[in-house]
Image 1 (cartoon, rainbow, N blue to C red):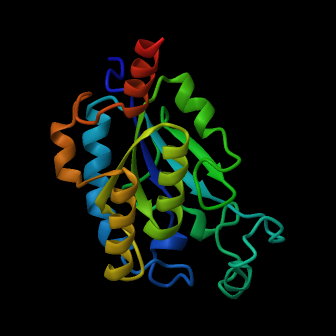
Image 2: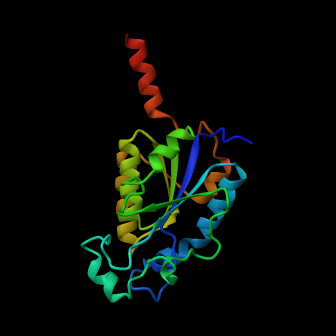
Length: 210
């Protein structure tokens, strides 16, 4: 069955370094979102929507670690290097053979990755975002997606922050920017008309003005 919804699901950074409580990079709210992420994944698989697992990996020597994270990365035992425990997927959120895996070097899933190229090749117009953390990787991916003319959905109950105050303020900012805030349960009723294709509407308006 073809993906008639022109939609892709981006599950961002749900690896053990960000979810496991013993990790120095753990996001406090991440573990609680795992069941909802699993639910969203199952629903969207049933709709034949392409699944993208967005993953952070670092070189052992730290040459590609963000400068602001380098010291905590060292103190934490150099997590998220290839084959390290921190780089493992969270149980129940593992890729399947037909899923896409994107390795990102910075916060946004679009920054210096092949994500935009693949989404356009697949005819994707809307991206659904889940994972961690909301103020960093979710938010930067959201804004980059908007800049690239994708329609953006953020799953509130599938994203996480260090505090609820940070979570709410960032969801509010993204909604004000134009993202649609939903929860995993609402995905059951998701259809191609659930999200207006704003860029397509603008193109249509411009053509009519000629």
